[in-house]
Every structure is written in C-alpha cells, then in structure tokens.
Length: 225
Image 1: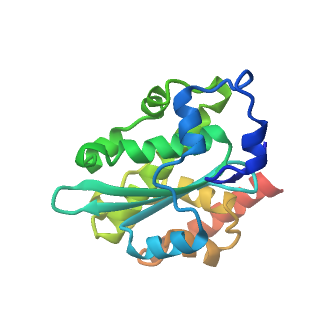
Image 2 (image 1 turned 60 degrees about the vertical axis):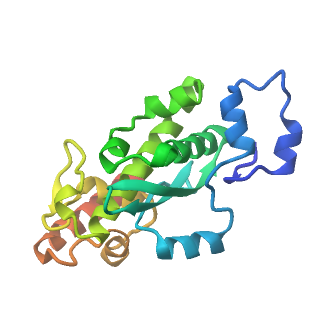
C-alpha cells in the first residue's frame, strides 16, 4: 500500500476491494475522509504558529509518524482544537483522525480527561483494529500526550509536565527525560545541538549537559552502530 500524509492516493482507493477490506466501517470512513487534518505543509506551518502545543512521535524513515497540534482554552483547561498530520497506513490515519474528534467533541476534553485517554479507547471508537495494527493507536496516544506536555512547557506550567514511568529525569528544570533524548536521536538528532533544538534540554539546567551528551552517544551506538 502507498503511504501518504493523511490523504488517500487514487491508486490506493481504486485497489480497495470490499471483499478484502478487513477494517471496520469506522476505520474505512476515517481513512478515506480524515477529520481535522492539515493537508499541506503550508497549513501545518501556519497552524503551528498559532497552536498552544505540538507533539510528534515516530519517524517516516522507520515507520509511522504522527504530529499533533492542539489549542487549549486556558480558562476551562479544555482542548478546543486538535489538528494533525500522519505518515502511515490506514490504521494510523484512522486512529489519529478519530482521536482528534474524541478530544474536541462536546465542547472539548479537559487536559486531565485527555491525559486519561488510552489506546484501547481509540480502538473501541473505531470498533476494532487488527492486532498487528494496535500500535497505531498507541502512537496517537503518545503524540497527544507530547502535545499536552509541550503546552505545559510553553504556558509555563512546568509542574504539570508528565514524566514517563521508569524514566530518568535528566533536565531537572524542564523535566526532560532519557526517553525524550532517545526519541530525539531516533528522529535524526545525532549531536547535542540538534537534540537541544528538538527538546530544549540544557537551556536552563546547564548541569545536565554532560549527561545528555553521554545519552546521545549511547543511543547512537545502540540504534546506528
């Protein structure tokens, strides 16, 4: 199948045979008619400038990639808009699309409700996904959490930043973890300057820089030899 950014190539659509389609009607609808999508890079760039938080997980070089933008009403602490782009298969596109609807429906989820959203909730709304495609809903959940953390950072609510269980907090001020460094390396940041540009690690907590450099070398060796 041809992988595209949140849109369906005509050749793909033409090849879909109803008899061989093993996804639910909900997955099919959100694949062919994705909701809340930013279709072009121009749209994404313009929206990012006015968004309150952005989260990105995965890499197009090694599989599915998702990017989520959110707008938050600071008075109600509710997510009012959720836009996205996804490089990936039908499951990845459908999972991101339906998740974007879930977090803004009925006036929008509060940040607390959005953080409680689980991959199983996304799959349930899609009426199921093939077992080997369940990871697509996990990526959507992670991208949303990353966008919320970015919102906390940008709005000065650093005490609300969520740290993954079992993660080592490297930057004590921004609560950036070894997992954040690992993801940055996997996304192509292979030196300290590139990692800092992605994560802002060490901008305020200078004491963590030697540890960050050690982690960069460790993950480069682990994944790239």
